[in-house]
Image (tube, rainbow over all chains, first blue to last red; front, side, top):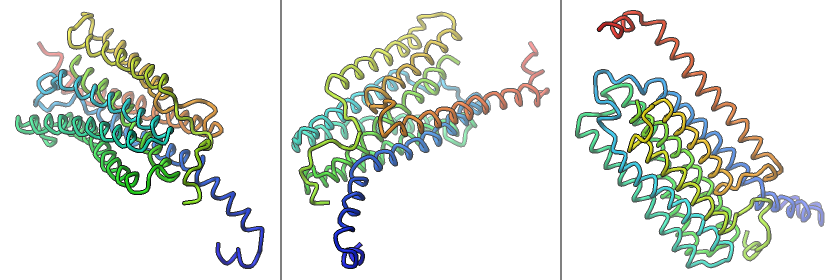
Length: 208
Length: 122
């Protein structure tokens, strides 16, 4: 870019401006949306695998023996609450209030951590009872599907901590706003996937 | 990048939503989550098949609610490209899910006569 600026005079300035408009505006959001759609396909494969293998218990434990719907309801509530608190973080970000944004992000992170600890506790409980991923095809596909979602939440939390540090250091600059909007889409998307998980895995599992 | 520090104007067509929008979305999702959980936990409807269909319908509606109120999907965002990508993905997801379930159900039903007979035995 520097070389074109020295050789071509005024024109590269115009060129540079145009590229900036693209980087700051639509393309990042659309690109991130496309990533989410590809992530959606990953989850579709895992749902399909669970749908096909979910009935193969290999004479092992079935959903009814393992799942505690009360805990799942608490988990769903936590994730839903984290979705709305992230929404509040975005609204305060729009008003440029750094402290309030940070506070809402922290609340969102706590809900996310609560969700993860309950889920890990549930996994540990199942494994202690002998319902390991190796036990049956049902359990393999269950742990793969729900574990992948949990892994996404984990990385969302890591991302959130990173962005909170960025905001603390540089404030709500344009770049940080854009990153927070990407994380917002990621976080709400995880909530959408969780709707599929609690419906198809937990509720339908109890009906089976 | 630093030149854009306080550029508080529009963000290139990515809508943010409003407090009202988030609250409507939240209340709707709470209702749409609570009813299926209540139905399954209490067994409000005796027919399991009917319960399953209703639970799935609630999930579908809730996914749309999240898309509209939390992810701010609308046909105009990003010049229609996000909607196009979403429709494409939904078509792929439907093909993958229904195709897998359909094919594998028939494989199970037709390819394992031994198991099938065993299940029929009293």
